[in-house]
Length: 191
Image (tube, rainbow, N blue to C red):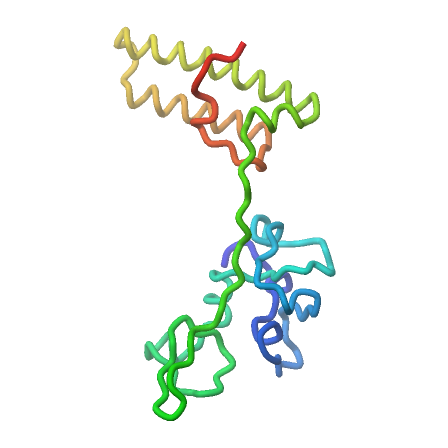
């Protein structure tokens, strides 16, 4: 799990049962034990500054990376009835029947903001950046389209140049929320 420190991850054993490791490096937080959702800040940035965050700092990827049952990983099934580790698969026992797989906290659905709404609600600097970006991209698009039409530029090169320019604008603006997809800049002419 790249970019995520162990200290920023909730202990699976503590969250779903009881951690017996006296020197556990994972977080032991009571504030999220009853939650079934993953913290959105933690999910996006792999850290959360809220010490009493009511949501889990776990997702499927981290659980599999750090807490997946070794028997399930190597032998494809676990035969231990009271195994405290994470199980992706149901376990079959003759005496006890089927034990379902462990639950995983879900990432809450995020309503995407439309660019128009985002620009209206943001501060003037962000609004200016977005308007300038729209105008610049419109001019670049026209220039590249004309160059391709006049066969001065190969279509594939034109698409590549436009993508690079778009990525540069998005990077310079440091816009992470909402996620701006390239298609957001196309469409009706803006005045």
